[in-house]
Image (cartoon, rainbow, N blue to C red; front, side, top):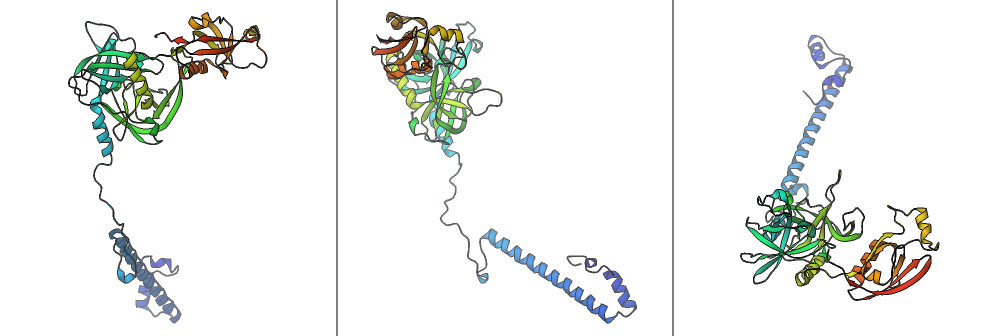
Length: 413
């Protein structure tokens, strides 16, 4: 049978009926000629379809094999100079992880001394061995991992537990340094240059999430230098800003203090936090290595970070979350031109000695505008040193005043 049923071409007489009629009686000349033309047309279509199918099959075969017939005038389509695959495409991740894993430890913070010595009274975290001398190895971790520690222990990648000592900690940067006996410690993590990170660069996170030590996750650098607000006192008021690397590598509870590693096997950040909320995924953050190493070295040298201290407890004049009531603002008697500043709530130390009082409104440090408690703290920590003089411009009872004080060292927290 042809490609189509012959009835498609004749609505009057089927082929089967036509064959019967041709045997039984003669057919008029016109009808016979028409029938022959129809049969010839069907045969032609069948032949053309067969030829077309054969040509398509040859062309497809030639494309697959890359060898078109020279007689047809086609040129061979070869990809030149292709080097065969050298193996696993994730080989760099495997090598980077292997280089850093032995330097990443699990940290157990026994918050209370207990005869049972169980993890029920403990907090878990991670740390990175970054330095070693003759008798000690030093570990970087987060301050919140070791906060309130009664006893500290670390667990190496091969399962060995060792006692750890706190060298120094800094609440503002959320970094701390521990020390352990250096015997048997053979791998030290290399810290990379976090300023050279690129958006989309592949990174891996190594740590101790939920107590599942020696865990590896991977992702990309989602943002190279993100600034996020934090509450140093955990009171819900954002009074500091942390510069961090944003990544979508999975970071969970216990990953804090662990390593964020590039594909060269260098630690480019210390994992510190994640945003955990309904409908939120892939928002993890790490403290950049360039910032980490400066803090860590000072902690090893001094046991703390020396920061300037003013001694002012304050609130923002223009706080959108806790705005001043209209009667409170009127009591300050500020000129209408003063829209922003810091209202003094209490004073101690240098501020008290300089004569600052309740309801004074600070507007400038050394001529630079201070519009919030955050900007006040950032100026003190980033622009001044202990012992520096500081010129403070403020309003009292609607009158602008200025006083110069000598900054002292911030007491330990």
